[in-house]
Length: 354
Image 1 (cartoon, rainbow, N blue to C red):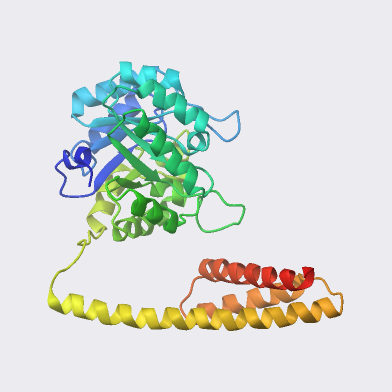
Image 2: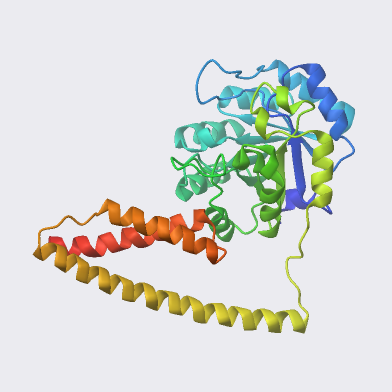
């Protein structure tokens, strides 16, 4: 855990809460006072709202920063908002906003991140970097490195999921392995989950939040509104302050480890079993690819195209049904067999082209 996060003196994960958008001063203050005595330490509100398409509510602008100042004065909570350019940064600094985050649409652009880094150089603000819209770890890492190079030491990241053309139960697919890989690269960098944007709907927030805590995330950013159904932006994914309080009570905070002999012995035994099974999986996949090479040779001899869509769709449908019987999710089966199928195609293409 980084020093700036440690300075909060938290017994629970860091909780950042507040509305997707600051709508009116009265709305901002009402929500803030409802959150004042909850687990939420930081009050968030979108002041400038970059929307995917024009014509939607795009934020109240700089006037909302004055409302956040009032939040800090009356509740003692820290304040946070998104910045997307030099002007946003300068206004946020003038209004003493404590935490600035760089949104997913900004992280994709090294030009934007560099502009923000230059504007922040020499300040002591906490800066959080959301993952880019698409699952590109290098872009995410690059954003962090640009800020660090600008001598910004109080850094953290927000995992808000990734856009995908495939329809899944999530608004933004979590791709947990990318967040885990980033954590492996920067183990002291606070990792905060944004379940609101991953889920896109309030009924799955609890499960995603629990998964994040089980993966040892340092905190949660949860969009909280006094009247979620009538919010001016992202209504479906926001919850009331009362719901947030109950959710935090229901979440289980896991220990990072257990040093007792009973735990370590059982864990070693189970991990040994997994090692054996993983080895068997690789052997089986190797055998499968040898069969694919044979199929590739046969197709080459008969001048048949590599991709057979009908056969592939039949396999996928069958494997999804069989996977359910083994307790495997449809999402996992799709990912795994698409990867296996692609590797099989690669083997067949090498045979045909050579």
